[in-house]
Length: 266
Image 1 (cartoon, rainbow, N blue to C red):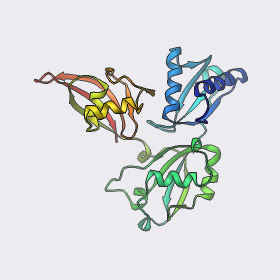
Image 2: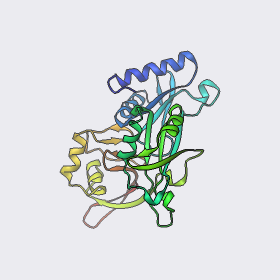
Image 3: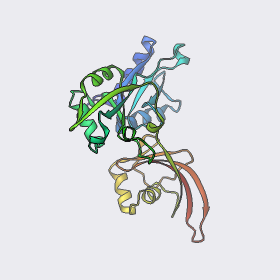
């Protein structure tokens, strides 16, 4: 979706189109800021709809930051239609000669093919485990809009100086699914800024700055209020640092501080 347009207006237009044409309508991949506006629209209705249409955001697997919004549901139309998302596996032709490539390297090579950013979803670089093979350790997974997948397979031959291969995945492999680490941490209080600071080893001033700059998202919505307490099940995303799920409060310490339980994406 073009970042220069009114995102909320465009979402309403797509919802209306789905309703009047009685068919599913999909966006391209929306970024975090655009999804924040989408979730704000849903929050206004309180019913998970935009206009008269059900909708849902999905990026290909659990925890994706970039998502496609689907307008319509089986309850409305009487049939299911999958999201137009393909998962591609990109790996070096000769693993032992491959460079150490970054997210930026892969994205740059994809954009270099003349592709629009909104056609490309999350780029997942799996964690490296000791028992992984060289090929597995250097494989990267990319969610893309269906219609560009064959073009990428046919035309992406190199990432930087590394000769690569590209293939479609029939399902999301385990190494492409986000891993969650359960943590219990001590904070001064159940405030968003205090928990963000503790989890990412920041000072309270650094944490506050992230809120001021609009880099903290609660359940997809941009948060400027740093003092809001969290509820069990809340999902917090901090741009440039990561994401976590709040699992509730524990007991108090002897010094009257608070245990909180979270699951952190790693």
